[in-house]
Length: 320
Image 1 (tube, rainbow, N blue to C red):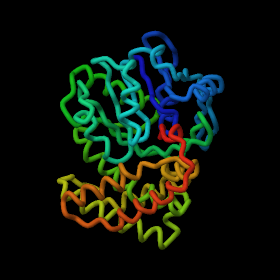
Image 2: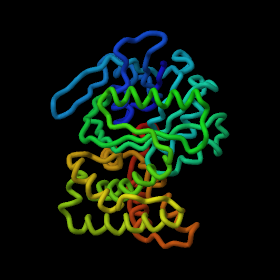
Image 3: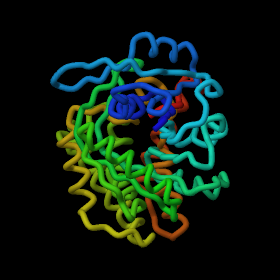
């Protein structure tokens, strides 16, 4: 199987190391794709470094910015920011064929209408992963916390794409991840949204790790209010909730205590965040349903005010 991962951010590098085949061949290969040619050359020379508390491993993964040279792929995993997804998909057309499985790993729920919005010819797959990944340097990812990854379709896929998704799950399971195929991926995406909505903006605003949110009374109180507000919107949207969202968010803070959230990583690198796809999406759904969301609105405004101070460089925002 020929697999491409688009975006060399924390999640892209993590999945690249986990999916890297033992043997590279024309039939079984993996590419990590980066629009920045200079960085792609650097990552090809140094390899991708995978780090845990047990040490480091270096993987000789092929990294390229030349999509035409890479050619069509059996599977393409999009690990780019939600706000860059439409542009990214257009640039990735050389990778795609009607048989290609597209897998989207964005945070939030702002990308769930991607098939209708961009008139994709086949049903894409979506992933919800709570693996903790922090990019320590270009191509150097810290696997900071273990979680669970769900894979599934929002609409009926072809038999080929079902088979490809099963194969993706098998490879990730063989690499040591806790992976499950979901018949209700929308519920899993909302379950992750509860966690991201509470943790991501607050870690960015307080400039702290996930675990440090638990040691601050002010931060913990705000997290509780944001998550409860998000739960109210979810129930109004008809989302099935089987696990208490607040307890789930607090458990993730504890289990990924050392993790630097993606939004905090964005703040520290002065990149635009996915606030619109996470808390902003909750605000929009609340307005549509007539449900007040003042605590989500507050963090959206604060994050956007923080972003206004950045010296913006569009090339900083591509990966997660």
